[in-house]
Image 1 (cartoon, rainbow, N blue to C red):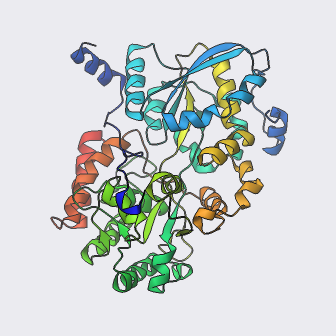
Image 2: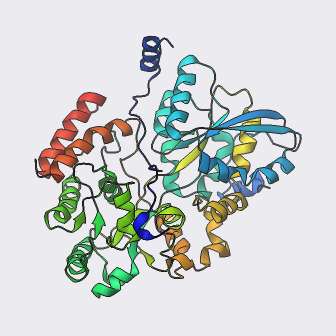
Image 3: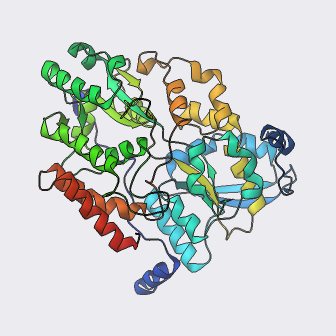
Length: 458
């Protein structure tokens, strides 16, 4: 297949329906519708001898029958570990229920509202997790998961907790960097190593456009999804809300600065007006008319598999530029966990499954090697696999780069119990700004007002 006739694909990172997840509202809606690990001691020693409550020991004799819900690609990754899991726990049986994410969440909500029918284990995206934690739908796994806390990249625990108790086991993070077309940069005479700040990035965009005609990145106007905006806010440690949960879109000066920065690319003709996850968007990347994609590690999987499989050697990766001297060069987009539901009567078997699949660096490494789903377990980063050159990226050691980013992702006010609602309210305002219908300040003030009205946040 040539670069010019890329087959359109369904958006693999699409947004899901905007539900405000409360048991009361779900009940109203339903009525209207008619409807091999290290020992615990070793972990405690590594954590400085911290004492924890006694935890039930799982053994080969642990029994149970569990159901795991999730979507195709991620479940296929988990299945790679099943042979070893069954050898370690031969008396545990399990089955997978594969549905698209939106349908998975819909069925989870119905089960929560009904008080029965939930899976034992489910795959949940980080962007959706706070809703379920806040609702009390997930099992408290604090006692057995605590030893893993120092072993997993720190930011991943933020949404798993409530009142210092843990309710999910992290899987993949979404470390972000800049994917760039080597051929476009070379033609323009731009050295990616010279791009240290976002101002450098903007100046490089002007040079690339002048000398090659290529756009620096793809940012739709009328169909903008707000994803880049969120990613750049995350890098700056800010977002929709502050640590107290108060809306800050119209209060934190960094938010307005970030939106205005993106706006410069629209105003100066440096951004391609192409809707994400559409044929023109794919062609911009595969054909070299787009110079960069600022995205998470999972974007490389899409390049290799269906966006630009014939572009091996044409892409490279560099760290995010900084906003200020000594500032963060790390951000996040996406990520997921495995969670055990409180309805489950098979919690020991469910724990064995989750712990074996996500608590062993061998398990997370195997899944990464075979499916490119990036691990959050830091001991996995020490494996020689991370030091290997990646031919697709011009023999660059990109796995090491993303491991460095994952370990430094800052806390930010992006994902929360109201994330889907906040994104859906802010995005139209960003689109109006992109179309020149209002200023960045007006867009953020309008978005903040709507979010406060809808979520009752301060």
